[in-house]
Amino acid sequence: MVNTKSLLQTISEEKSPDDRTPFPGENVLIMWKGEKQDFKDDYLLGHVKAIDLSNNILEGQIPEGISSLVRLKQINLSRNHLSGAIMSKIGQLTSLESLDLSHNHLSGEIPLSLAKISSLDVLDLSYNNLSGRIPYGTQLQGFNTSSYIGNHGLCGAPLPKCDGDEVAIIPQNNVDVMHRKDNFMLGVYISVVLGFIFGFWGVCGSLVVKTSWRHVFFQFYDDIKDKIYVVVIMNFCLFCSSGVADVAFKESPAMIN
Figure (tube, rainbow, N blue to C red):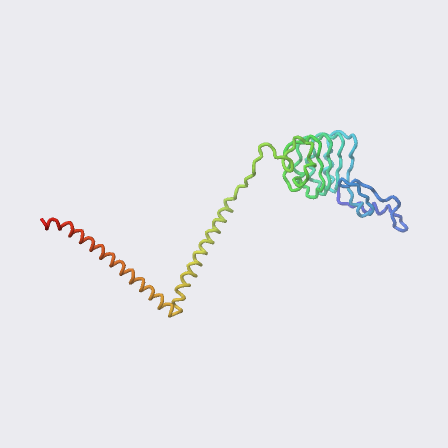
């Protein structure tokens, strides 16, 4: 379990040298990932690297040396009287697929390195005296609450939030904000330029190309100009005439006297 040497060769030597058929009773019934499984194939059996010392009266701490068994796939030390903390180097067990430490007297926090074991499929730390926040990671948050139940000091997803937890606000990076602002302004400039090109030249270009349209446009412009001129002159005349009438009305009583 410490190195990468396969156990397949040892299992193959247990076969008959004559016909290479397995001896009777070679099948092994193993509690694998919480279920009893019958391993009949020597290839599959060769990949079973597990420690199962559950349901005993083991006491003391979990040996640190277990963390050097890098090829270990399953650890089941449940239902004993183990105490102390979970070894901090448990994250070195990169091949670990199943870990069951339930129903013991383990205390302290869950090691941060446990969250780094990406191959972990089964986890049971229930009914211990563990405390603190469950380390954040895809693996540990993906397990059901039953994996942590019975540890009254534990908190954090998937268990209830810890005291003082608030909604995490991820600060925006100033560089990203400026980058998005620059992109927005660039889009505004491009829109203005394209709008001017299509709007201005869409009108002027058509007048240059189509002579009849040009004549109609300038004729319309001249008509508008004439109408505006007439309206201004008439209003001016009305204003002037009303002023003269007021002056004459004021002077008329003096003339009568």
